[in-house]
Length: 316
Ligand code: BMA
Image 1 (cartoon, rainbow, N blue to C red):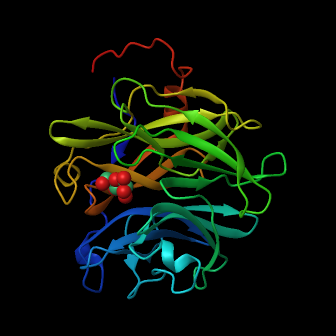
Image 2: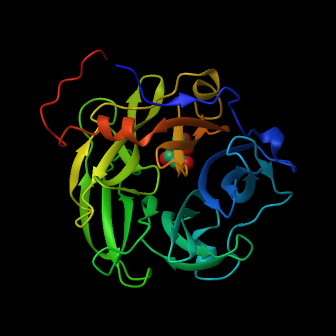
């Protein structure tokens, strides 16, 4: 089977050399369109090993100009400061009601938890809530309210070697979250150890399309790959179909080697104006950023299996 994503020939599109100040690595970026520009919210890890977010801008989605200094750094104000002391990681951007919401991982002494903030202009950023308790990451908001509630995918549990599943939770105000339900759990094979949402849900006539990552523990370390799932438009806790096999995995040298080898980790994607072409931005080996493209049609065609069926892998 041919996997649907084509890597950009100029990969990696952003490396630590492109950051105009000293840093260790740049990876796992949120992505969206803003006006006539593509925006990446880069996770930059500084030389202390603590991550912050820096903006990068592009007219064509391939060539990015990185801003001269960090945009969002660890919170100074409580209650956020306590939970971001070890840094902020893996932002997912969701345009919603005229604002751009960012769900990210706040990392502190008590563990990782999900933080939500927002911007209207990519200049000022306000933190809204500590949306989950600790031991939770990989969160992304849906781009509209469903049945009057904000909806968010997240991944409670999954730390310290525990199996991790994708969950959904609901809120009237982005602060109080509840009615949580499990969405997708690990199965045998490529996502045996953990699953987590990768990209914010994209609305299609067939359902909410979401990329998710699956982790497999191997004797050589953890292997991070990507699958796709389709959620019901009205009841987004329902998985209509998914790709039981991965659709993207580490192949190239910059994905195979780096601070954490064998990792591809998308946090953002952009649907082009043609309504078909998708640009997926992903962290490679926790060291740099790659871009791969596909079409909506190809991804939807691969989401054919109801989850947890007796699908037998072929050709793997
Ligand atoms: C996950 C997250 C990501 C990271 C990945 C691979 O748990 O922490 O930020 O890219 O591990 O190291």
